[in-house]
Amino acid sequence: MMLTSRASVLLPPSKEKIAQSIASYVSSRLLSTPGPTSRSRVLRNHSSLTSDDNDGHIGASRQPPLTTFTEDEQMVRDMARQWANETIRPIVREMDEEEKVRQNVLDGLFECGLMGMEIPEEFGGSGLNFTSACLVVEELSRIDPSVSIMVDIHNTLTNNAVQFWGSPSLQQKWLPRLASDTISSFALSEAGSGSDAFAMKTSAELSPDGSYFTLNGTKLWISNAREAGVFLLFANTDLSKGYKGITAFMIDAQTPGITIGPPEKKLGLRASSTCPVILENVKVERDDVLGEVGLGYKYCINILNEGRIGIAAQQVGIAKGCMDAAMPYLEERKQFGTSIGDFQGMQHQYAQIATEIRAAELLTYDSCRRKEMGLPFIKEASMAKLYASQVAERTASKCIEWLGGLGFTREMPV
Image (cartoon, rainbow, N blue to C red):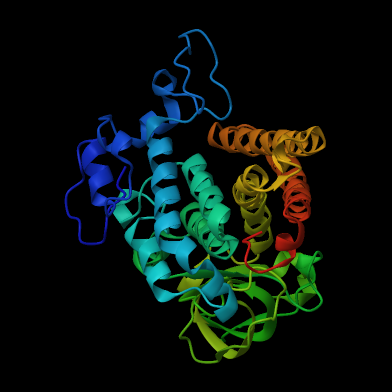
């Protein structure tokens, strides 16, 4: 595993050196704990698993809990947590007001290896597993979901799609850039194709000599559009075939004919850009087709299935972030000589929310492990996304309520 800055040359042989190479963002406990770093160990060696609760009583014949993570996974999670607290937390409110993720945050995501988490090391990525990526998404979402959604889309959708279905030349062209300096955007939705995604009207007409396609149409609600250097974009090469004409393209954002519209004025996730993308006679080389012509609908379905797990991780992070903000207040705020968190009526409420967050977490990481093990996971991923989203909303609403008048101010991060 390699989680280093772009300046690094050698693969560090120990966890201590890996941690030091991530701009000193790993805690001293982790820095003092050596350990092997191979990706196979992350995926297979259960003997090295340590519990999140760390009671030290996992026997060789016992299955570890779902939220038991390998040392490497814990290291990545803790690094992301510390980096987010030190770099993002101080400017979350400013970025929300400015409706823009600041450049130092974007640069830091690449420098810490968080934009190429599952990209193999041979392409400059970190060579991590899917669970590690979801842990990072959760930790970032705990501080700022606008940053988390950017990382989630980039890693679980674009990067993985290029790895799964991209030709060797397309992988060589884009994976090193996606890991080092180029943000991606997943361009699917249109005015008439939201939930009915395959009703898209964006067309891709093949040139007479078969060397390029000409794309025309408008995509709406496209996350990361303003910052993107490349679009994973879906268009129909033969509208008469319906969804069987849908094809996926990797399109450089600087290609002539692409216009990024103004970002939507959203009620939340305001630092995350959500923009229309207009295509007017955009010429795309045949070699920039992802996979096979006419199979874009299959790629879309498959990548969005695992993308649901990433969304669930976002929601778990949002819920935990709300609790992080509200619980200290319940201890500090006193009424009738008692902390309001000590009243039994309050204890019932936050115990219920904590239980629901734990359930959402278990659903999410069960889906992660099922995917990594090659087991069916579509149903479980859908359940995780549904339930975690419901829990995030309930948690946020309850935390606003518990904070009283402060909960209705922008002083609090809830």
